[in-house]
Image (tube, rainbow, N blue to C red; front, top):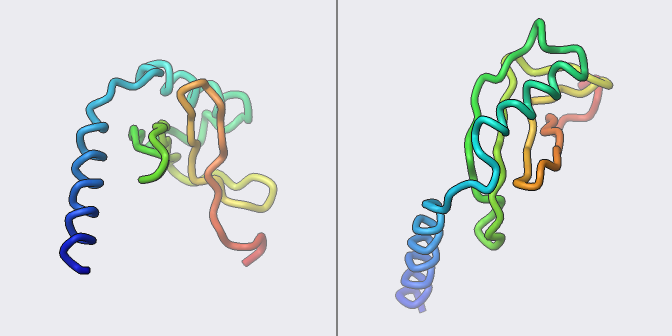
Length: 104
């Protein structure tokens, strides 16, 4: 039972690595522009910046990719810390916030 499971895991990880060579539907320059525009729209472009950006698969079971943008430093909005953004290839934005309850 262990050997087939190990082979299945190795095969799925190999397939994931091969898919990572897929060219992003949204170019890096556009993702950076979207993130910079977002910072400006919330009035945080003076004190915060893009610390890193990466192109990653959403999950092992989902073949979609997103740009993950990390702020430097995290932004405090609405009592939560916003760590960055997730940018889908269609331009849809999702705020990446800390998991702690507000005020803790």
